[in-house]
Structure formats: structure tokens, C-alpha cells
Image (cartoon, rainbow, N blue to C red; front, top):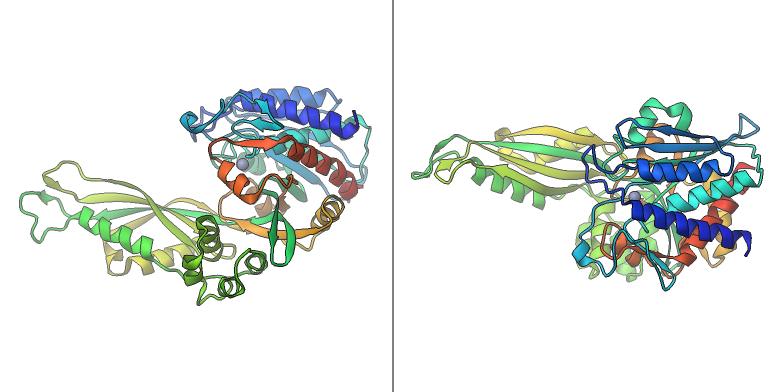
Length: 447
Ligand SMILES: [Zn+2]
């Protein structure tokens, strides 16, 4: 077997082990229990003589850090970061055991195969192989197997950046969400995530006056007002924002030229989104060009014959790079109009948007790698509507990208339908490519 075959086999096995560990993060502090996969990673990496540090801010929520120290303190530090937790499953929707880690017809099945235990495993394998080869780079390589990505990083990356920046700080970070290939009107492109939208979750308390439900005429019913609040928030059309990343992405979409042009025109983009037949493309185009408002929770009322004096709504709001929490409050006031005086707005959770530039040495290193492996393709940056741990590192000054080269067999449709979905799985060829990608990229970037 070649070095790559050996490394790929290790990635497959490590991925299977982590799938079987079922570190399911349901958002509660006691869930996840990533200590099990952290221990696996620690003994795996120590086998190559690496020193591994572990951090456990909350019982069971352990993250591990290994580093290959560079010889030149002025050279850049690169971190490979993979999370070890996964989201819950609905087993009835699966053809196979979601925590079986089965290898069937060249695919590894299980929760986390795409998001993102495959990368977490391949990054560990590459780090171990580079250490075992006695590689002494100019710049430092850091590996981070991190807990609690799926619930916002309070027990993982957010905590580590706040409390252990000496251990996890890096000039450059590679993590999840990217690496599939799209074929559009201007050729083949390998997608790299360069930024992500921020979150500005809001709780809206809609006020009324309690009264007897037997005589509703003229009463001040919080639920009736809340219905109008929901309608107004859902119908609200914020001004469109077209940034350069979206401009490039829209040009690569497999749509007619007129639609592609409309997608980068602030005056026409909303209508263009409505005209796109493919729902996945339409909602991505909309999310990449607008602040989005999704009313997702309602609590209210106490008894069938009591007119409610308060109804509580929760709205998932996502902001584009460049927008702030204050912008969101202005937009909400605009959406509520005359109802604004009947509503108290509370900030549930604010997380800034983030974006890294593409004219960086790491970007060019990824370009060089893709040119070798997939010479027909160029890189295509995109932002993601969801959040990842990359944001904490961008906030701390790192350039962070989502990347990990996938095989042609994994399309964007496959990637996104399996991500948090049923029948999550990845082909061994993608595991081989991704492992090889770190083995090539780290030496070429760090020297
Ligand atoms: Zn993930």
C-alpha cells in the first residue's frame, strides 16, 4: 500500500470510531460527551509522539489540541480544526444504523460522515503522518478536535478562543463546509467557504390587557396582535445587499443569463429568487442577499376563556457581513410599524457575521492544490447562511476557510441534503482526497 492508501484506511477507521461514539449534541450542557472521541484522538495522535493538550470547560465536553512547532517564530501558524460532536437523528428516516459507521459499497454511513467527522478524522491522520515523518516546518501546525460546534461553541471553540488563545490561536484556520465541485456557465469551480452570516435572535413580547373571553369586542388581545406581528415580520422585505462574494457565486449558477443578472441587482433580486424553480438555490440566493427573518417559536395564553395579556415570539434573524445588531433592531421596528409600541424586543443571542479575504497566502495555496488535483477547476468563494466555529477565529484575527476536497461523486445536492439530514454518508474516495489534501497543503503552506 502507498502512504496515501495507509492514511486513507486510517481516516476510514477513525471516522467509523467517531460515528459509533455518537457524540450527539442536543444543545444541553450534559449532551455531546465528546470526551469519548477526544480520548480516541488523543491516543491516536500520541502514537506518533505528538504532545496533546486537552481542555474540558464543562464535564465531558473535552477538546484536544496537538501541535507541530515551527522552527521560525515569524512564520504563519495554520490550524486544522474539526468538531467531534454531531446533531441528533430521526432513525426512522435512515436506511442504515445512523451510529453504525458501516462501510458499504465504498461509502461510510452515519451521523457526522459529512458534518464533519470525516474532516476531523482526515485532519488528525494527516497531522499524525506528518509528525511521524519527522517533518519540521517553518510555521507551526495546530490540530484542534473541538467539542460543541453544533450548539454554538460555549463548551468548545468560543470558550477556547476566550480562555486559551495561546493554545488555539492561529493566523490561518481550515475547517468545515466546502470542497464540492459545481459546473456552471463559466466552468468547473471548487467551492470554499470564506464567510458566514451572523445571528441576531430576538424575543418579541407582545403586550395586551387581560379580560374575559366571553366578551371579546374591543378588547386588547395580545394573541390577535401577535398574529399580525408574525405576519408583518414574515412579509418584511429588507433592502437587498449585493457583495462581491455573492456576485462571483451568482455568475457560477446554472441559470439563464437574465436570472443571473437579476440576482446581482438589488432592485430585482427578490423577484429573481421567486422565479427560481429549484427551492434550494432560491433560498440560498435569498439568504446570501438579505437579512432573513424566521418567526419560529410562539408561547402564549393561559386559558380558553382568558384574553391573553402577553404572547412571546422568537425570531431567528440572520445578518450579512457588514450588518450589525443595531441594524436588526431598526429593521424590526420598521417591520412592526404601528405595532412597535405594543412589543418589547429582547436580544436572545447575537453573533456577528464574519468574512475572510481571498487574496491571502492560504487561498493561493488551496488554488495550487486544486490546480494539481482538479486542473479543470478554479476556486469559488461563498458565504454560508449557517454558523460554524470559524467565526470565533475570524473575530480573533484569523483568516478562516471552509474546505476539504470532495470527490466528484458528492454533489452540492448530496452534501446539503445529508448535512443534518437522513442517510448521511461519504465515499472513501472523498476521504482519500481530503486526507491527501492536508498532507500536500500543510508542507506547501508551512514550508
Ligand atoms: Zn459541522
